[in-house]
Every structure is written in structure tokens, then in C-alpha cells.
Length: 87
Image (tube, rainbow, N blue to C red; front, side, top):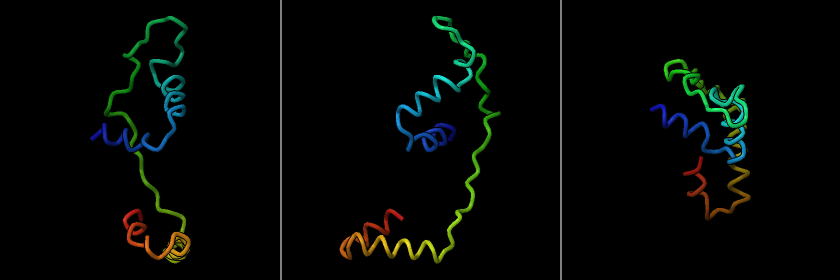
């Protein structure tokens, strides 16, 4: 389950963003000097990783319906079924 959470967290990020995070914000890399061995004992235990909580969206149901209708109109009537699968 942890692996799925990590994948979901990073799947939409650009490679450079992921690498920046790994190089500058992960425990073994923090305070490490060039050519120094990495200390992996600094890594948080899996139990201590805070859970991400999805917050409710800011758009009302009516606003979402309006946006969907606009998208459907712009994409064309023939693609409504495909659009429903995405949403």
C-alpha cells in the first residue's frame, strides 16, 4: 500500500521535480557533502510518514456541471462518452 501511495503522489510530477526532491529534501541527502557516503539510517521509518488527506474541492456541483458541459461542447458531441470516462 505504501508503494501505491508513493506512486500516486509522484505520478503526475515532471522528472526534474522528482529529482530535485530526492537530491535536496530526502533525509540521506540533507547535510551531505560531496563524495561523502550517504547515511540511510536518517530515513524516517514508514510508520512515521504523515498521511495525505484529500480535501474537498472548492467548486460547487453546479460549477462542475457547467465546466463539464462547456468541455463537452468544445470537444464535440461524438466524444462525450470518452469524456465521461475521464471525469
